[in-house]
Length: 300
Ligand SMILES: Nc1nc2c(ncn2[C@@H]2O[C@H](COP(=O)(O)OP(=O)(O)OP(=O)(O)O)[C@@H](O)[C@H]2O)c(=O)[nH]1
Ligand SMILES: [Mg+2]
Image (cartoon, rainbow, N blue to C red; front, side, top):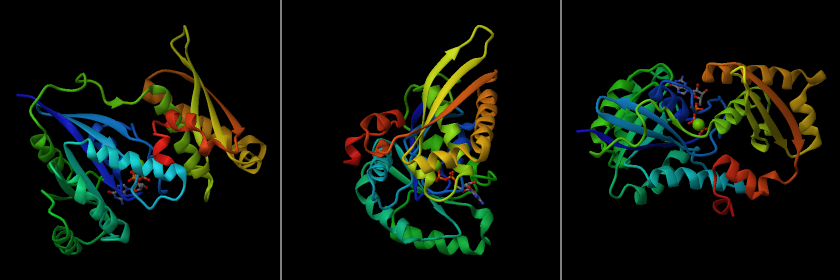
């Protein structure tokens, strides 16, 4: 008998949700940075475990939203939890029960009805194991988790046990995706995310949050390579200068890193062309949100 279902990964920004999704899938389908609020929309990755097909749903981090984009991201995250068969809450071992975690636990009250909610204490490589028992106890006194796992998404510790448990929890039924599919995200969006990751890693302070990347054209060429054109939207002239960098050095380095990653992902040659456009109001434009896979009205 086969099983299949959705596992939503929720948690504060930076908890390691995208790192865990990539590890489960065995490929990098969701971008990862050391900065908070990296993931902006729901990203599905597919993993097989025995006869079970686990569809992991990576979500934006849950935090107190201020701007329109924040609200749309948080709505997408809770929406992912509400649609899932199993919800997995990730917290960071070294940070413990933060105010942000407390707020998420309040929010879980409603979502928890009719679905299993499990806890994953992530980044256990950063704390001594004695600390984990106290944290497990504290969290389980606050919420009735079906199970608690101690993992390191980055190093892989504890991940197989989590996988086995999830595979057994999913409802019986036919698989939802072809067995060899690893992501449910258009290639042009994966490509735009790769460029956004490289930019985020290189740019400082607020800039990554005020920037978005879209794939404008994708052409398959006769020689088997792909020609990809992307636009980086920023809100100010000054930001454009920063993204370009001295003598265009920054954008050149970003373009090279993104092109190499995309070529490796596709297993063929890629020609990547980046253009920076100043668009003071992109954070208020419905079209930008739909390109990211977000609901504009949720950000109202
Ligand atoms: N030490 C350690 N670092 C980790 C682990 N898992 C993730 N990280 C790091 O934590 C940072 C955030 O990881 P992400 O996977 O981007 O976190 P996220 O929860 O998806 O973050 P948002 O998309 O912003 O909500 C990155 O620098 C990761 O390398 C872990 O098990 N141990
Ligand atoms: Mg993420």
